Image (cartoon, rainbow, N blue to C red; front, top):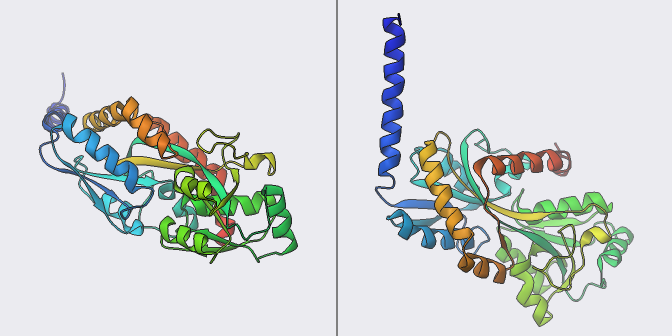
Length: 315
């Protein structure tokens, strides 16, 4: 015979599950917001496409809430786990904590929803730099240690990681110049204020075509169709790989049924021909995943980069 205590516990658990199930069935019942970085940045682009695409299927308006990049993860981590506040961020979400102190744990404080997209970085230089390929740039950097200025975004951003990893694997010393985002960093490169930058293929494509920037290499394992005609950096710096990733999250303890519903609708869009056409034109590969696959990607990246990032941060 079950004890009164056991029956009570089972009943209470059943009641909690029933409440979560009911809420999930009703979800969404109001506006959903996707918290992401400022307008015009790499996070903002996929956030707006996804918001517009899943508004109809979910039956509620999805709005993009642009905030300073350093605040977005903290805002979502502290939000109720009800599916109404989501996060779209790049790999800085899980790499950033290796470089600087943050108020969140990228795994414990969040529920992974899906990987959104991935694309290689392109190593581009100002035309005034006397280097026509990666080998020549490495030789130049070794001959003039610290003289080359590389534009980077915030600590842990994709181009910061790309620059640190390149310095480590190529055995060169460069000076990283931090900017408040990719847009001002690109402006600095175009003006000649800095000579080097790693950037997404889509962001640099028009400047490569106009001749305002010279592409030396792409950070995918092999040459990429997202950057036609640009050789792999790995051909000159063996083993070098550095991708730009974007992913979506909810606060930890978001009910599984809500996670499943969001994952399904985001995947439906990312797998559509419309999404593929838009993303590929922007130099990005839509790459939906399961929540579990996203966590595996995050853990693998942290394991691969932890030592290098901590050394760069002086930890």
